[in-house]
Structure formats: C-alpha cells, structure tokens
Image (cartoon, rainbow, N blue to C red; front, side):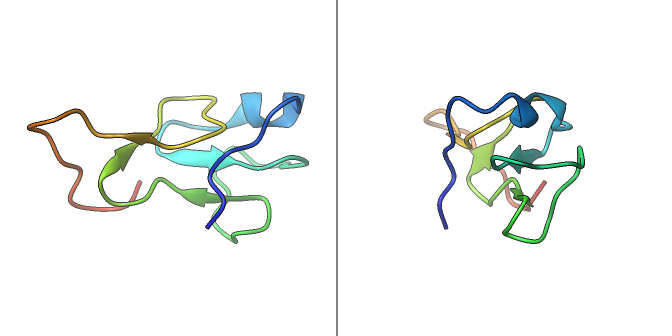
Length: 64
C-alpha cells in the first residue's frame, strides 16, 4: 500500500487515524483509492498524508 503523497492540498482534510491520497474528498477515506485507515503499527495525526511508524517501545494494535 502506498502511504505517501505530496503536493496535494486535499490531504489537509484528513481526520486523525486516516491517510488521505491526492484528490481525497472525505476526511475519513477507507477505500484504498482516496485513502486508508491508519495501519497497525503506525499513527496518523489529523491532516496526515503519510503514516508514521510508532516510536520505539510503543505500538498501535489496531487500524485507525
């Protein structure tokens, strides 16, 4: 799954727990076209355009 995008203002609408891809029109995409829920082992702050690996010693056990 591609988790990064750049140069597209649409990612700025994402709710925490989601990653928005270019052209996303929803703040909570989950179709792998407009975006995805944040994957296990990563965290995604609001307006995320890519997932961030959890810091050493922490873990996100579920999506979102």
